[in-house]
Image (cartoon, rainbow, N blue to C red):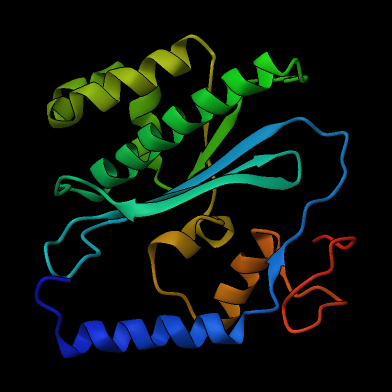
Amino acid sequence: MHNPTLDHWKAVKRILRYLKGSLTHGRTITSSTSSIINIYCDAGWAADHDDRRSHHGFAVYYGPNLISWSSRNQKVVARSSTEAEYRAIAFAASEVSWITSLVKELRLPCPRPPVIFCDNISAIYLTANPVFHQRSKHIKIDYHFVREKVVCEQICVQYIPSTDQIADVFTKALSSSRFAHRRSKLTVSKPDMCLSGVLDDNESY
């Protein structure tokens, strides 16, 4: 914003083209008896070419429905992909802690602790193996925050292959086909009946 260049202008035009081509898309919310909370989180290490800060993103599902998501730059420069991914887990854990508290306040069922899916094995080891502590002093606060949640069984962190990582769409450039597939997993689709992208009061996504 302070010093825009031609590259920034091209990026804005690309965003506007995407918005114009997806005006009739919306999120689908379905009725379900499932009350399981799953979180997919990912990070793009040093993805910002201007300051080399990493991106992170997460998607939180309650049953089959996407209820919370985020995509943003990390505030500090990560010195490794593991650090970037671990910070992504910490942000996701913070969000799901609030959601779990809200679910309990609403007296909704929560049959098991929320599961955070991450595609970085080293970051997952950090959540459970204190031997790695000496290698993680620079992310000490995030380390203890996530470790405490795991030890108290408030969250569970599990591995997921990159090919199945839904949060990829928040952190890195994807081919058109992969982007469309990830977008569908975020329950974003084109409604069957939609006039000019606007629904009547009696209709819903």
